[in-house]
Length: 110
Image 1 (spheres, rainbow, N blue to C red):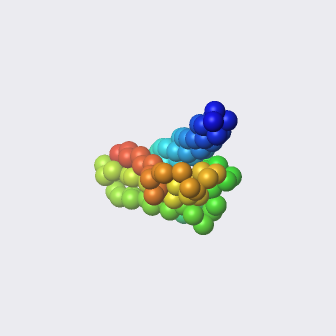
Image 2 (image 1 turned 120 degrees about the horizontal axis):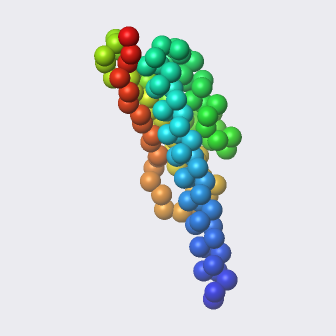
């Protein structure tokens, strides 16, 4: 009776670890690309490629959505990365939200 319960707990901890690591990588990628766009060292296309390189290797390239809102100096620059939870974790049968979203906003510099 105890072995199935401990197995379930261990798998849950492992699943949460994968999701947490993916979310932290998404936040870092959104922050870095927003900062680069806001100071003018990167274009939107370069930001999308840089965001992809920052995500963990187990997230398929075709599964994430990167959106960038850019404007003139003084406007907000926002990067949002969305990944389906089924692609960000190792097991797809545990109850989880449909997707995880990381977003970052910064003011564009002149």
